[in-house]
Image (cartoon, rainbow, N blue to C red):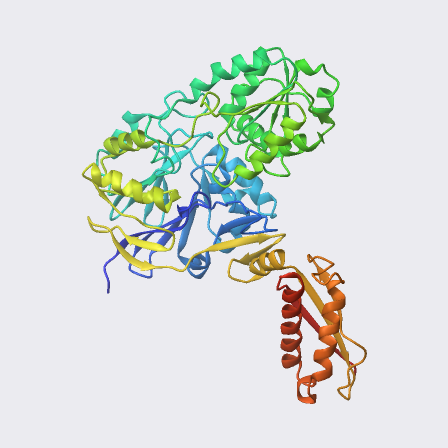
Length: 555
């Protein structure tokens, strides 16, 4: 029999930012008992995943090994760590552990799928532990841009692993727990086999700034705003939302929260005791009745989301509120790579309204929730692990984190999604490769990235579509001419005649030339009609559209 081993397997979040899902296992090869860390999502874009609502990790491997899963542990309540809980819970069938604030958010997501909130078990911070199979797990507080973020201290028969989750080293985070190096050193003094560590800001060379440094700049800006003041940030950044609200309150403004996610996060903070105070808020309908200079809106949509409050205010009215010339709009956030187009669209729409836009271009109104390069070095010095395994980053981030670690004289191992590491011995090694990828939430249905649905959608968007219909009687005689319907194609071609007329003429000629054997074989006839349609379209308008052929045979 093979010896027992400790494995680490990222299924999402290693080689990308977002969609976090990590697996640890201990036992005999192929029989390991498993725990899952985080079930996150990432968001679609019109270029690569048009029409898709959410993107989740492909957990086929977990489904196949469902009977080996002991539990799911969620590190914090950001969407890229907890967003897929409701969608994927039924496939795992294991209890979910989280701290109070995160548990509150997770229960809300499960309730959307009719799952009882008892599936989520609330855990207190270190030194409380959870025993599941061969794993003893505790939640070690760490600062981040959302309350109650925690690293996981994972004890196994093969040694201790610390999974950092997302973190920054902030001693004055305003909301949530501060970075406590003494506690971390105490937890690490018995020896840490592997530090599995956030890599997001490995290229940022300056020490990270504290959340407390944002307040004074925000307060000065809000106090000088002549008309309505609007601010947007990540809804989950409860500390920032509180800072914005308090700045507005001190300036004598009534605070109005716009956006379901914003209200939900503040409610969760109050319900769980994370927020001990928050300025009184007014409803949108009340805000419309107040003098504009006495109102401050705090709104969702800092990343350009089309349906969020920011985008709707930029386009027109939202809940009866309309922005006007001289109003001020603050982006207290940084734009996540990939969201630049959406944010730029909102900036320009606001400018067209005469709204004065303030961004964080100079770094005054936002600080990152992730550890910068010097902070990653500090983390390694405090924990002193035998091995560092970078996670939560694109491939270039992981690779740079490996180089940084090796430059400090420590061992590092690079593992991307689907690469299973054996951490049992002092030197990690690749145990095997697991096929992984993405799952799309398309409407209310989960589909695989390789199912072809989104690919076909992209091809239709790029090339247009033609529907060709022909009718054939029971004797194989063609009744009438084929006819076409086009979508997403220009109506008039290079010969200055309707494209449909050209296609139908060429298809009629093809049908007239077709032999009886072809007319009686649906596959051959469909293939021929498709080729003629695409070639005729190419000649007429320079496009080869997607073609659907309908052959109706009369009995």
